[in-house]
Structure formats: C-alpha cells, structure tokens
Image (cartoon, rainbow, N blue to C red; front, side):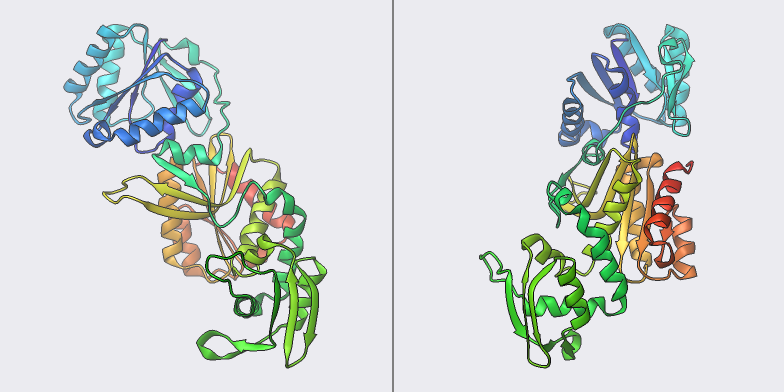
Length: 393
C-alpha cells in the first residue's frame, strides 16, 4: 500500500490511527467543504504526523458524503492517478460506505476497518496485511489535541516540574481531608495575607494579621491547626503564630505558594499522582490548557482540563471538583471528551463532596463516571480509575 484513502471523521482519532500505524507514502482524505478550505486544520494533521516521526504526502479533497455516485467517481479518480491504493472504511456516512464497497469491488482495492472494542483492524476485502494487527500505538496527551485541530498550552501547573513534588501530593491531600469543611476559608486566608505585587516576583516570606476579611466581609481567622500541619509536611517554614494578633511564615517555594493560594489544586494534584500510581498510563498531564483554533467561528477559544491521562490510544479526561457537581461541569467535560477523544475516550468527575443522585444520573446519561468523597482513599481511587479504563464503549 502506497496510498491510503480515508473518509474524514469528526472523531479526530479515526482520521489518524490507520495512517499512523501503516505509514503509507500518501494519505488522501475525502472531507467536508469546511475542512477542505481549512488550511490551518490540515496543517495540524500534517504536524501531527511529523511529530510522530514521518512525513507523508497529505491531500484533502472536498466531497459530498450524501451522494454515493459522486463519492464513487472521486474514489475511481484517485485510483487512476495513485498506485497501490487501500481504503479505510472506519468512518464515513452510509453513502460513503456504500460507495466504498462498490469501489473496492470494481477495482479490487483492499479495504479494511478498525474495531474500537477490540483495538485492532479487520480485513473487509483484499487487505490481508491488516489481519491480526493490533493497534500498538501509544499517544501522548498533546497528540489528542493536535490531531483534533487544537494545541496544548501551559496551564496553572508546570508539568515538567511536577515529578520533583510527587512525594508531597498524598500528604497535601491528607491535610485537605482533615480540614475539608474549612478549606475555602484556609485558602482564602492565605490569599489575603500573601498578596502579589504586579510585575514583581511574589515574596515567599509572609507576615499578616491573625484575622482578615473573608468572603462577604466576614472575619476570617488563621486556622492554627491547618497551618501547623502544612508546616509539618514542609509546605510552610518558620511558622510563628501570636493568637489574635499576627501570623508569620515562609512558603517553601513559589510553586507551593501558588498551590496554597488555589482552592482546587490539592484535588487535581492528588488525582494526577493517583493516575501515575496506577501504572497503566503512558502519559499524564495536570492542568492541560487546550487552545481551539477557529472553533465554531470563534478564534482563540481555550479550555482547561484538570487531568488528562492516556493509555495507548485511549484518553481519560478528569474534572476535579472540591464543590458540588453541577450540570454545567458535566456538559463541559462531555464536550471536551468527544471533541478531543472521540468514542474511545473515557471521562470522569472526581469530587470531594458526596454526589447527589440528580448529578450522578446526569453524568451517567453522558457516559461520565463519578468518583465522590467515599472513594477518594488511594486504593479505592486507583481501582476506580483502572476499572474505567477497562470499560467497553
């Protein structure tokens, strides 16, 4: 096979799996008009292939996916000018599949398809080279964004540095669980006593009042027990408390300072570490910011996903909530999963609150798993994540 013909799919991964595995010299996509005109999206797919270590000739041809006759004529035209063609019929409309069948029959063109459940390719007609070929590809988180026309940017966390802090995350989460009901007040207090100066590196050494204004102007006093536990795990140093008067401490470093001024960081970091501890993922990213390129007519749209983990060609999108699970969060997670992962992707919401029945039902309707407070001990959370990744879709 020198030329592979693909029916372009909205599910991005189905556009790249077969080309990436079999590595033909040329890939020809029959695609809708908006993709045929979108040079930026086309360039993203070409960039994806180059980052995967190869540089095929890639062609995008506008096609009508509701006229089998027109599709057949295009397929015949491709075969006339491109030697040793094969057809991947994993995607496409009913009309495209019908035309593909006629094309394969008339020209004796090898055709095959991919099974998501079995993660392997099947010979439909004359494609013996795909028989018993399992999809052994392993993608990274950023690959899924790129193949779908997006790019991954820097989020609130520098993932290159997270490995330096792995030993801290479980202890940090234990402090959180001990003070979960007061966590918003604790973080708000730390925010108030450690303001940053615009344009300057924020100071690590802090001296502040024992009581500050909290939410809605209510007084918010230092939680002495929580501060001492944060000092015990090494997040704070040189802690000195004069009850009713002042608090003095030093953040270990700027990274710890950022985490202790962000209410949600503790659950995200714990979930990130737990994904690593399962040993089943080849790529895990915390605070993954994805930039969508001209999505639905809007340029510069961005979203942040708390944790994304990949096992082979299957991504898991995780949303972490230290508050109640809302319908908006469920809907947003479903959109991101479908956009960047397709039908193979998994999604779960991890919440540090008991999940109510209505939210759990809505999540189930959207194919999203819910992991709530009762399941956040390390052994239980690891097992839930492993089970989610084994589930068939």
